[in-house]
Length: 436
Image (cartoon, rainbow, N blue to C red; front, side):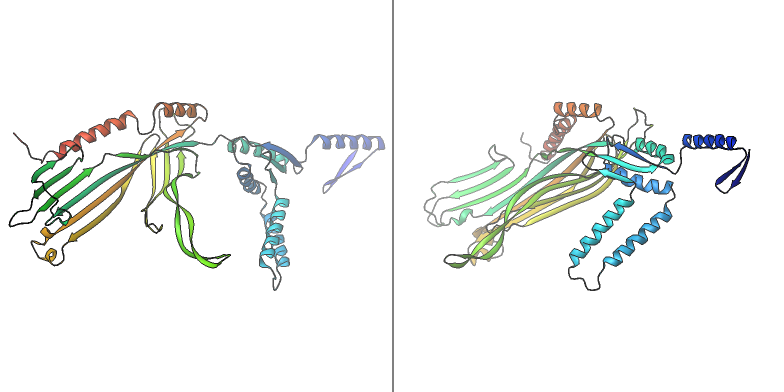
C-alpha cells in the first residue's frame, strides 16, 4: 500500500482490501479528532454582574483573540452600504429615516455578534470556536465575581451666628401721655434672651421735656453645631450614588389667559420645583486581592454637593441661593474627610426717623430708631467611606454597628462637641467685666 499526498488529499494505491481497511482507519481518526474551526454553543448565567456589560467585554476580547480585524472591516463596509441605500436624496420624514437606519444597524450588529444576551433570564448565549471556549470560560470566572462595594456615611453640620443691634428712641414715643413709668435699667445675658444687652431709659412728661423712651439693645447669639442631615448609602465600585434631600414648592409663573363660560380671563399659573441638598458621590475602590487583613484599602471619592436655599416671598417667586462643591480626594478606609467653607451671610438694615430732625448730624440719631440684623451660617460636610470586602459578613457587621450607634451620636463626636462648648464659654467670658 502506497500513499500519495496531493495538497489536502490522500491517494491510496494498493490492493482493494488494504485500501478499504485504510479508508476506514482514516475515517475513524477523523471522527476522533475535533475540528478546531468548528463552532460551539455555550450558555452561561451571570451570578454577580450585568450580562450586557460582560457581553460587551467578551465581544472585544474575542475579536482580538480570533484576529477578526478583517471581518470587522467587512461588517463596517456592509453597514456603510446599507446606510447609503437607506439615505434618500430628499427625505420626506427625517425622523422615520433615522429610526429605519438605527433598526437596521441593531439587526446587523445582532446578527454578527458572537454573544447574545437574554434579558429575561440574565444569561449570555455565545457561539464561539471550540478551541477558544476554554479561554472564554476562564475569562468568565474572572469577570463574574461579586463586585466591591463601599458604604458612605455623610454628616451635614450647620453653625449659625446672629447679630442684632437697635438704637434710638423706642418707637418714636415723644410726648406720649400713656407712659407713666420712670425706669432705668441695664440687663445682660438674661434668662429669656440669652446674649442680649438692654439699656432702657424712660421718663414721664415734665414741665420742660416731653415723655420719651430710649432703648439700646445688642444681641450676639451663637448657636451650637446643629446636625442637619445624616444620610448613609451603599454603592458599587465606580457607580454614582445620589442622595437628594429636597423640598417641593410652588412657583408663580405669572398670569395666563384661560377660556371660561363667561369669556377669557387671566389666572395665575403655578409650577412645582425642588430645592434642597443634593449629594452625588462616585467611589473608586483601590483594594489589592493580596491585601493583608491588617492593611487598609483606599477609596477615591468624586463628590458633587449642591445646596439650594429659598426665601419665602409674598408673590410666590422666591430668590434661590445656590452653593456648590466639587471635589476629588483619595482617603483610607474608615477615615473621614471634611468639606467646609459654605458660608451664607444676610445683612438687614432698617431705619425709622422723624423728617428733618433725624437728618441732623450728630444728634439725629436721638430722633429715630436704627435696626441692624446680621445672620451668617456655615455648613460642614463629613464623609466617611467603609469598604465592604465580604458582601455577607461585612454588611451584617455594618448593619449591627449602625443599629447600635446612630450617626452623630458616636462617643468621639459627643466628646469633641462638649469640649467645643466649654472652649466657647471660656473664650466669651475672657474679656468680660469681673465683679469683686
